Amino acid sequence: MPGSKKNLNDLSVVIKGAGEMASGITHRLYQAGIHRIAMLEIARPLSVRRFVSFCEAVYDGTAKVEGVESEMVTDVPSIKKAWERGRIAVIVDPAWKTVKTLSPDAVVDATMAKRNLGTTKTEAPFVIGVGPGFEAPRDVHAVVESNRGHDLGRVIYDGTAEPYTGVPGEMKGVGKERVLRAPSAGMVKHIRKIGDAVKEGEPVLFVGDAQVCAPFDGILRGLIREIEVEKNEKVGDVDPRAKREFCRTISDKARAIGGGVLEALLHEYNEMEK
Image 1: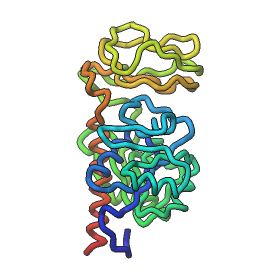
Image 2 (image 1 turned 60 degrees about the horizontal axis):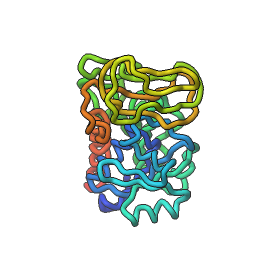
Image 3 (image 1 turned 45 degrees about the vertical axis):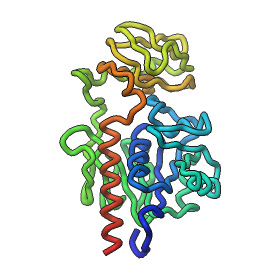
Image 4 (image 1 turned 135 degrees about the horizontal axis):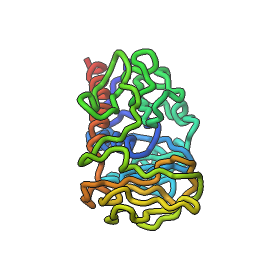
């Protein structure tokens, strides 16, 4: 954001992605007073934690996460109208063309792709990459650590985030088992719904003709929509803590990453104001 004097409330930010982590980031920025946010998504988002993902607006027109609302839009004029209504704008734009037409003050790549799909620091005055695949200051101006552990949410101005481990964070001693994956490609058909208590071995959904069962007792914290998925796609999330309210609240990880992104933006803004 160098070279321009703006109120913090006037900053415009494009977030690449609108899934769980991108939504946690967006919610944190919005609560801090940065309301001019546009999120770029694919045509068929694959969100599992749908109750905390702004990308659900792609299917339903609007989506609400902890009191903050998003709205599906189609172009830059409608993005600005959504902002006037106090809403986050969500647009289907897998090619990220909106970045050029909107000319935001900052871009955050929160696709969580574990690699850089083409983000560069020339896209905006300030560009942040979340997680592995980005190197600061070569590719982006700052990187935010996404791996659970001591450095989760740390802002990195020289270097990279930790490599992708492929192992979800543990909950009550349970790690990768809590993630339900498609045993084959096919159409998802729900048996249970988000928020349901499930028992070990109990059927949760079908993928094609294959049944996917709960690996242990808990609450079904996340469940993908009834759409076509590829083999090994994440399709569900069972939480052994068994607290139904967690289904509708942002995770500790997403909040920490959001805090890192907010810190980086505020640091840059304060440097600009000196």
